[in-house]
Length: 190
Image (cartoon, rainbow, N blue to C red; front, side, top):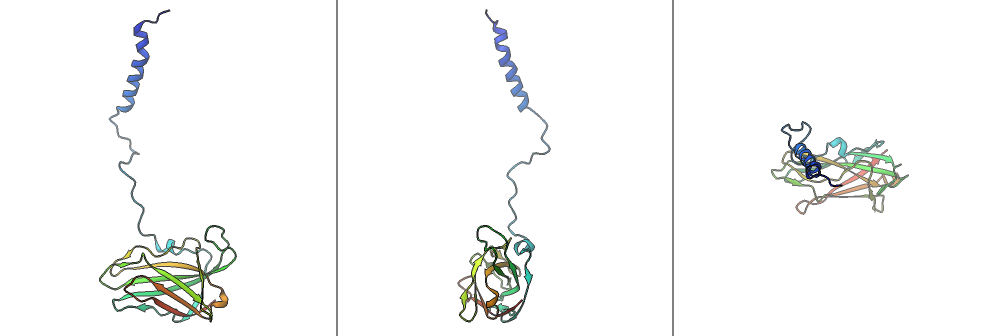
């Protein structure tokens, strides 16, 4: 049995017309967004940066309360101290330990941008000045980016610093080669 030539070409013609019609629409899709998606925000809101659910504020005394101001009017301060018993399990989490969280604030009173990408924070405690182990907790973030002249930025750092060491605490904050390390010494009162 021979299929007439016109019938053999019909399925190919129908397919070609269907493909042409699907790509030829003069209406624009209302949902379609041209181009790449917008970049994520470079600044994270301070409440998210320093979120530490369940953490309790503690009082501080001595040099932990005094900000360090440099000759170029850059200021570093301990703006808060909290503690929390960690119940999380995961990378960097120390389950069951009491963590001490220091919130630091940089204020840029200079006329130049202040680069915070190299901030390093070290905590020591007790008479022997043992180094507390840094750890992660919740949504805490390190300093990053640049602070414009007149601006400020905060970030929080968590340490495995036992409460037995609260009578003598030293916090060192270094951030660039132009400024000496900011040292804070004092006591924490739960």
